[in-house]
Amino acid sequence: MVVSIFFMTLTTVYAQNESDTEESTSDNQTGMEMSDERREDSAHDSSEMGNNAHGGRHARPDAVAPAGVMGDHTHHEGRWMVSLKFMSMEMDGNRLGDDRKSLEEMFYFPQYSPQFTTVKSNGQFVQVLNPGAYYYSAVPIRMRMNMYMAGAMYGVSDNLTIMNTLPLMKISMDHMTRRGQLFKTETDGVGDYRFGMLYRFVNTDMHRLHWNLGLSLPTGSIEKKDDTPVGYKQKLPYPMQTGSGTYDILPGVTYRGFAEDFSWGAQLLATLRTSQNKNDYRLGNVYESSLWIAYRLLDWLSVSARLNGIERDNIEGADPDYDPQFIATADPERRGGRVVRALLGFNFLIPGETFGGLRLNLEYGEPIYQHLNGPQLEEDALFSAGVLYAF
Image (cartoon, rainbow, N blue to C red; front, side):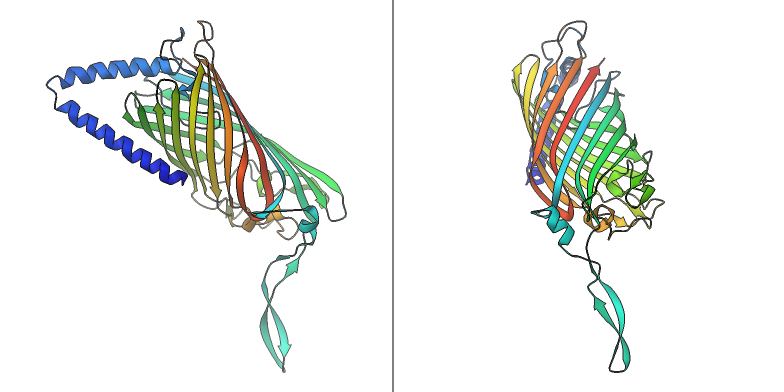
């Protein structure tokens, strides 16, 4: 549904832009009018993004998308934006498909790893399919992932912006063993570095469209270890690693719309894995969509509502160091799923000469739908905050 609405909007906006262009070229004063429009759009872009230290009449708090949206806007030629963002995700309890599972169900609900077994029947040896039922020895209870992202954007031209982001991650997960022993594992470190470009191909007073294209480099670790009941310095399962170990392609498209006191937007993004890493697996592809609307309450404050959907594929391949029968987080077939979130956000634009161009964005949301290829931990809450400065 979100994808269908997005493409209907994109088609309408692009058709309108083509119509406007044809009408403009039929005018005898085309060259002069287009030059004037470019100057007006340029001034509008600069002041809208808060580049005007005095907070021009077009500066507005919703000129940037809600805090959880990345790569949502382009910059005027020669302009910079630096940012520091924080994201925290809380996960509590386990889910299989649409159903939440209790600890008792997690420990005593049988999992299956079918395999062929050779048996003797009527004097002959034959192969039969053994269901291979087993029970987990440990179960994850809750998880918290905190991510700190330092980023920068630069306007190469009015339509082309380059950007890069380096995350620092801290992950913790609480567990319980079959004997009732509680233990926690923790990791931290650099995540995968991302860089890319945004190319704007529609720019009118009301509508804007740009392509997102980026590359993720495997700067994060896939060898993180910690102490567990199994032993000292054991390699931790997939969700506790800070990196993917692969070069990933990051395509997408973003739409923004503006009116007097309202703004709205839509975005489609993907993370496409290119190959297996050195540990013989690759994380699943990720597909993400967002729809949002914002209302300007004051010259320096706006409120937003956003729907965000994410679909993740299962992991392909498997790390030979993991035993998927010990704990579900080590099973590559139990990492995919779909989540839809509803989020509320606030954007603040700091007025005045001293801090003109400084922004603070906050957003909080919870899932309204989850279907997981579990059992795996389900998401409970997501919080994002960002400080941005344009100059």
